[in-house]
Length: 89
Image 1 (cartoon, rainbow, N blue to C red):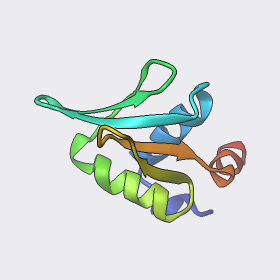
Image 2 (cartoon, rainbow, N blue to C red):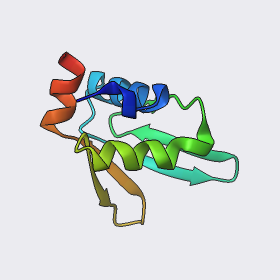
Image 3 (cartoon, helix red, strand yellow):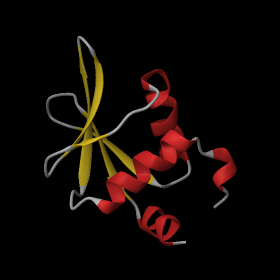
């Protein structure tokens, strides 16, 4: 998978998530912006908040993240096997 289509932030989101013990993270919007919260605790660092949606969409469209909605309307993301292979290459 070419890295040219992924921003540095998208690669960092994927790297931090795959290195964590969490099997999902949630995108949580609040009055001060957005957080990407790992299910086992902790957060994924965001450098450019305005591009988070674009980066998450790109990671999903490339098959590196899966997407679902939580019962409370939170966007949930999970790693795919391709994400782990991508990180290990």
